[in-house]
Structures are given as structure tokens and as C-alpha cells.
Length: 296
Image (cartoon, rainbow, N blue to C red; front, side, top):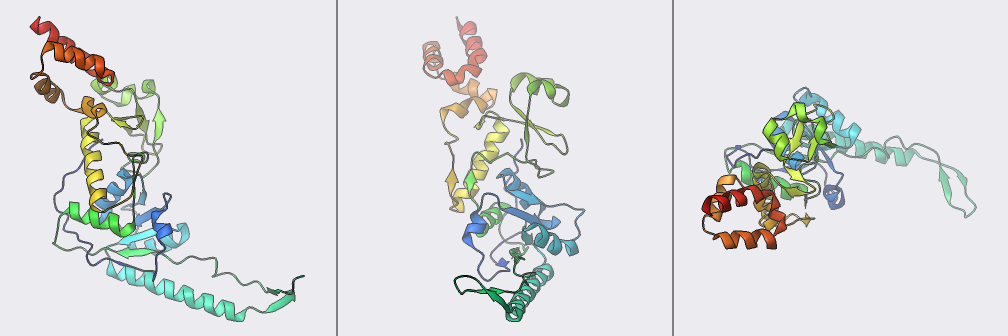
């Protein structure tokens, strides 16, 4: 797993708009909510995927095809194109007009046992949903960090620890658990030796590691989780299933140099007591033993 810095994207959502007059909060907060982004927002898509949201963003998708894809698959559309956004607004207005005409043309064909009217069929447009779309304007203000905070707030996203790192950053596919022996040929020998839990993308076959049963055990993954949590907290997003990343259990994911520097301030007796009191640090036993042997 890798993290990205906070350098500027040149994007700001202070001029963002959405193409429905009242986008339902329930839809935006839905854990199954899926997004479609034009390729200019690819970096945004990667962060949505890290948070566990489905974010379709493919260079092979032409911008002119995005409206149809969003309508067909019921995807929330994010675009930096004002023209495309206006096309979505026109589509929604046309759909509302068709629904109104359709209702006016329906006629009573019978009455049920309670005397209620039974209307003729004609629900071709009533079953179609309006497209929820957001126009995210690019400009030179702010940083990518502030850009993502605004997007998280705008879309009503939440932070769910159980969902973080559940998707392939390249393909958007949901990752599958992979037995350790099946990834030996695909990872560096040192990675294979250190880590026990792996996941694999069913599409591109890329292997991921750094998270074990929800616990971060890799420093790169730790930094990414820290960044995602800060983004969501600044956006005042709901948090579910979270554990403080400063909990002792995450100490083992820090680099060896950090462990060595901290242990340098402890006596041998302190180190022995630390290992007894906090068995979660058993992965550091070799470092502890080396320190004790070298000083005895």
C-alpha cells in the first residue's frame, strides 16, 4: 500500500454544483453508493477507492459516453466539464417532462374491489431515475488535501475502517483474500517473509499487503490511514469501526529505526517488562532480543 502527499491538484470545490434539485441524503450516505468520474478526476477516484467506494474512472471511457453510463448503471457522476454537467441537467429536465406527460396520458381501465382506479400501463419513464451529478470546477486555489476534504463533505461520505483498502486502486475491483503460498512468486522475498495476510485483485491480479484483520501492520499503510482519517475528520464525516491509529497495536508497523531509537531510551528491564505486559509487540521480539544480547 502506498500513500500520496498533500501537494496541490489545482482543484477546488467551492464552485461545485449538483444536477438534481434535491439529492437525497440517504442516497449519498448509502454504503453501496457508486461513482463515475471523468478521467481528469482520476486522482480523486483513487482516494474514493482507498476509502472503499466504487469509483469508475477509465481513460477508455469517452466523456460523451459518461451520461449514458451513469443513467444505465445508476452511478453518481463527478465531472470537471461544465458542458457535460449541463447535458445532465437537460437530461433530467427532459425526464421530468416525459414523466408528467406520461401521467397525463394514463387512463382508468378498471376499478378494484375497493373502488380504487386501475390505470393503463405507461410507466416507461417513471421507472427511470434522474442522474445525480456534481460539477467540480478546476482552478488554481487550494491544495489537493483541501480539495478532497470538500469532495468528501459534498458527497456525504463516511469513514468505515472495515471498508478502507478493500478495492484495487487501479481497477476498482473488490479485493479477494489470497492464501500466502499463492502469492510467493508475485511479491519480494522480504515481503513474503514479513507479512502473512495478502489480498489480490481478481482483474489485474495485483497483490496487496499491509493490513492484517483490520489492523495496519505496514508503515506506508499506516500513513495512508492517518491521511484518510484526517481528511474525513476535517470534512466532519461519520466514522464507523475506527480504532485510534496511535493505539499500541500499531507500534509494530513503524520502521525499525523508530523502534531502535525508542528502545535506546529504555533499560533492559524496561524492555523485558514491555514485552511481558504488551504481547501484541511479539513481532518485535527479535529486535528486543538483539538489544538484550548486545548489552549483557
